Length: 333
Image 1 (cartoon, rainbow, N blue to C red):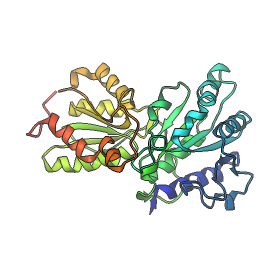
Image 2: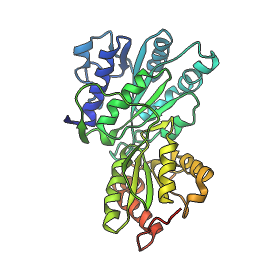
Image 3: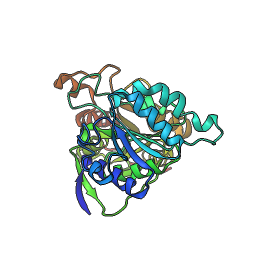
Image 4: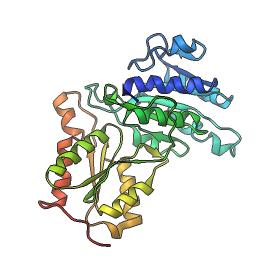
C-alpha cells in the first residue's frame, strides 16, 4: 500500500493494462515524448516503445477514427482527447459510428476502446476548456461512462474499461490530478456499474461523482457537527448506473441530494432523481434536491467560477435547510 497522486495513477493504470495485454496501445496528442499535456503518461514511451505509445497531429477526428479502425481489427486502443470539451469535435464518429457498431452489426463487430480526457472546472481554463461532460456522454446509447474520484478507483475502473467489450468514455477530473490517496500494490481490477458507499448515515443521502465526491464528504463532516448523520455515495460509473445502491440508501434515509458539476439542465442527477421518484416515492420524506452548476458557460474569473460550481458550503446549506434546525431521526418503517 502506498500513497499516490491521481495524476500518477493514470500512468500506472495505463501501464498495468499495456503489460497485461499486447493488444492495448495509447494514441493521442503529446502522449509520448511530452508525457501528456497533464503529465499523466510520462515513462510509457520508454517502456512500451513508439509502436504502442503514439503521438498524433492535432486532429481529434484522426485520433478517434484511428482508434475505431484499430478496435474493429482486434486491438484495444486507449485514445486521449486532452480536454473533454474537444470530444465534441469527434461526436459524429463517437455517437453515430462507435456507439452503434455493435448494435447495427448484431454483435458481429465489437469496438473495445477507451476514450479518456480531462474534464471539469475549478482551474481557470475558461468556458471552452472547463466543461463537465458526463451528461453529454450518458445520453448516447452504446457508450459506457466512467468517472473515478480517487487514485485507487481510477486504476481499478480503468482496467475494467480497457477489458470491456464496449466503448468506454473515461472521465479524469483535472481538479483531482494533484489529489492523493492510498493505492494497494499489485494489479487492481474493478467492475463497471458498482457505486461505493463512502460514508454511512441515516438522515440523508448525498450522491456525487468526480471532484464533487470529496466536497460531499467534507460537507458530511460539517453537517455531523450540526447533528446530521449523512450518507455519501460515489457513483463512479454513470453507465452502467448502480441504482440498487442508491435506492437502498434512500429507502433508509428518506432524503436524496445529488451534487453535480454539470450545468443544471439535463444533468446526470436528474436521471437519478427520476428513477428514485418512480421506484420508491413512498419512501421519500420530502423533495429530492439537485445541487448543480447553473445552466451557463463557466466563467474564467476565479471568484465567479468558484461561485457557480457546487461548494462544500453550498452543500451544507442545502442539506441543513431541508433537514431543519433539529436532526431528523429515522422513523420505523
